[in-house]
Image: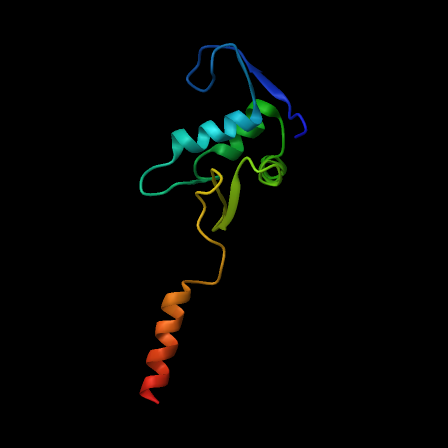
Length: 114
């Protein structure tokens, strides 16, 4: 896995972590764990503030960062309205065009009526 820049954040405001250096991979994983709310397992990159935090702390493009982290297996990404939702590996919903069981039930019901 290629090294991604570290952010050194200094200060004591509520927006920063005092004098810590943290790789962006760890920051994103911590963000997912701390910002998600039950029953959801992921966080929306825009509405959670993750995109802006990556821009501010690391001066990097958050879309490129999350795509690289997905390619490296650190996170999973699913498209969402007005952005994307990021998940820890294995926690993202299955990719597909719907529930196969529900689709089969609909087809059976329609064919039964005919």
